[in-house]
Length: 116
Image 1 (tube, rainbow, N blue to C red):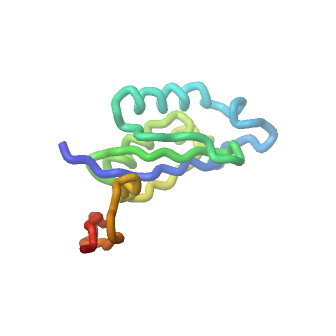
Image 2: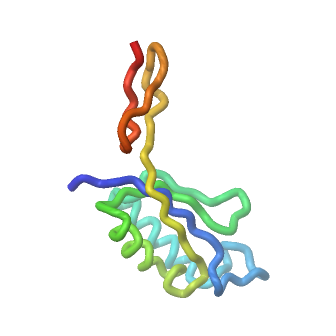
Image 3: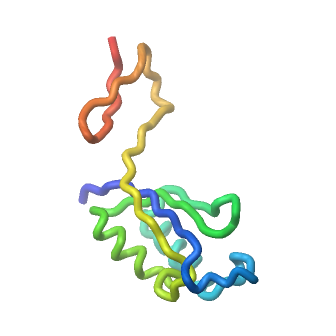
């Protein structure tokens, strides 16, 4: 199955308790178990907290945006409105590749080609 990459940004939801740190928010334990299950399934490429400790960002892979939305909607913190989320389609570029004379971008898929 061909997959696409998405950046998922988890943010404060309607039920976020401003008087509690992230580790004391409702459903946070279940949320972390959900994140671990995505890592175990190979969905998550990389993820982590934002510096403000009020949400997180992950690079995930799914078949399409609808599948991503459906899957992330199962997150207990999303279901309990402790967090909300945004999904952004993402086309990664491996900048570690040695490119001798520059980079040009072609097509909607942003493929890297070497300029000669």
